[in-house]
Amino acid sequence: VNRYPELRFLERANWDAFDPVLISECLFSTANIFSTLRLVQIFTVNPHLGPLQISLGRMLNDILKFFCVYLLVLIAFACGMNQLFWFFAQERGKNCAHTGLRHWHPKVNDTDNKDIYEYCVTRGKYFTK
Image (cartoon, rainbow, N blue to C red):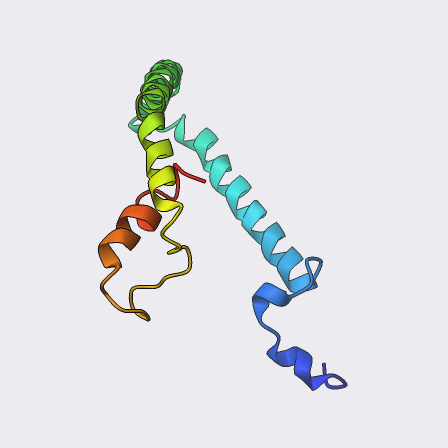
């Protein structure tokens, strides 16, 4: 580090992936997770927490079943809404193709085109091309 003083000021996001500090922090966090999970075995012996832990463990299967049904209903409604509104998204794309407001910014440019910008770019960017 003394030979290359600019490396001392390198941001953490730009560090090498195999930097010893990053690897040691990863191993330390993994050890913390396993040591905390080790407490789960100790809690089963406790007269207050043991029965609670056993009942929660058995209830986990029911929670997973409910989550699967919930996810299935959510996906069904998402597909239905997508099928219902695809036409309007295409129409919005056709109406906004001629505006040329793709790079227009409301803080920089005039505010005369703000309504057109909000209609064409902000609300329709996920459903149009």
